[in-house]
Image 1 (cartoon, rainbow, N blue to C red):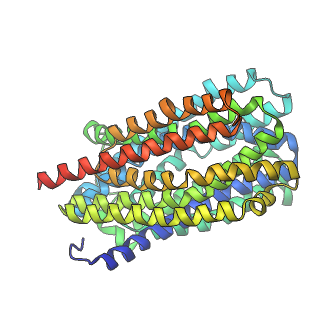
Image 2: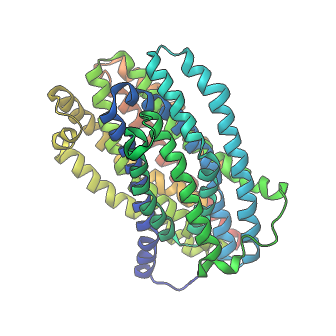
Image 3: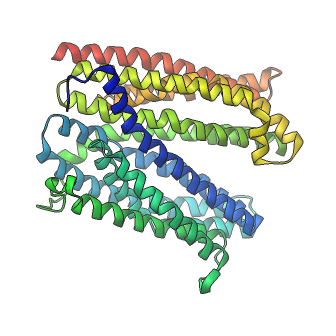
Amino acid sequence: MESSLPVERKSFRFAKIVMPILITQVALYLVTFFDILMTGRYNTYHLAGVTIGSSFWVPVYTGLAGILMALTPIIAQHVGARRNEHVRPSVQQGIYVSVALAAVVFGLILFVFFPIIRTMSLETPVSIVAIDYLKGMSVGLAPLFAYTVLRSFFDALGSTRVSMFIILISAPINVLLNYLLIYGHFGFPELGGAGAGYASGITYWIVFAIAGVVAVAGKPYQKYELLHHWQLPSWPYWKEILFIGVPIGMSIFIETSIFSVVTLLMSSYSTEVISAHQVALNFTSLLYMIPLSISMGATILVGQSIGAGQSSDARKYSLLGISFAVIFSFIGIAILLGFREPIASLYTTDKSIITLAAQFFIFAALFQLSDAVQAPIQGALRGYKDVNITFLMGFISLWVIGLPVGYAAATYTGLGPYGYWVGLIAGLTVGAIALSIRLRVVQKRHDLSI
């Protein structure tokens, strides 16, 4: 790790790390987009089934996969401290944890999600498709979680372009499999919405296979000998992964699930309002890929700096992450305010939905800045391995402050559905301020420990 890089070189290094992460995140977003688009063109019932199935899948998967993100700061600090001999057992134990998490998710799907879907007030075809879609996704559970471990390994080493190339290769494969399995072309079974699930499950195996070959045979990674001296499960490694990873996973879960809850609370409004809300939420989710990618880059570079005992560099990378995110947030605000109706028109031709979505975009613009500050600070704190207080602050800001404020604003003021977005703005703002204070405390503590 270079300790004497000037700020200009640090900025270039940060951008070099973040750009592949951003491309990877956008590619993953587009995979989901094509799943919905291609299923929607097949049949409305199948689209509804896939939507219901994914609403169960996404928060649980992202939350539990977030546990494995603990490996990024763990490995990054080993690399920064030149403790390369600890990388191999960390990856091997991460694989064990990933298999255990896959088993947990499979159990949830089988014994919790399926019964809930069967008891929901859904039309029978929709219920069947939702269950079959989750069955298809289950085919790829183990490789998906195992790939998350290998991605954390690549990212911790700063090799974020590897994950980018793997996803760019796999995304067209997923679209091709969708084409074959949803519509039944070239002699393949016509599975409709369930085909999207099986296509994703098969794609996850392909992704894991490619990542595995690169991790074992790639020249930069051979020195880590990931397949050599394979260990049995070791509780000390599991303890470290879970101690850091569980708060990360829970933080991600509460962040993703809050939007699902807000959507459910808005179900009392008209279909047009709900659709407009979804349009605004979908586009802002795309914009969020930028601060999210910067956050992941901050975790890598701060973790490597701390591992190398370079507290000053960790501070500088934290500041760079916040600065980059804030700059891009102003660009996002300008896009949302300047092109509200054209953006909404990309999703629908319904004039009433376009008008409502344009109003939602005003509120979406207001929380861009808070989101831009909060995300990289979370990433920096993860690089310091400071995750428990971060989780608690996230929970309080969104669930204790944001949701009640949103409900009160929507119920007792003239804001109506926009009140929920006011609550999100309030919660994210409080979270950004609290996390900023926490980062300063953690940085001072590390300065004193050197």
